[in-house]
Image 1 (tube, helix red, strand yellow):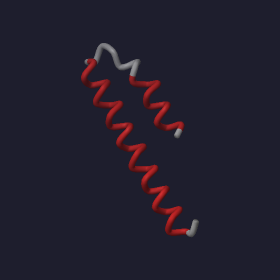
Image 2 (cartoon, rainbow, N blue to C red):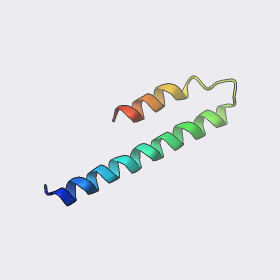
Image 3 (cartoon, helix red, strand yellow):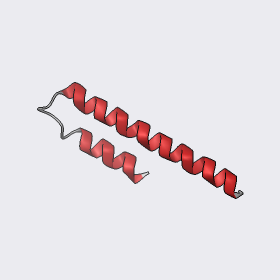
Length: 49
């Protein structure tokens, strides 16, 4: 794979990570301010990728 291919794959990875964070944050907001804890493992899983 050449440099352009690697850049495209890296860009897609960043996009997937950002979308995952947004989904986790929206899920936390829907649960209300009283239950932010369940979102933390989801964010950790997204950042682990």
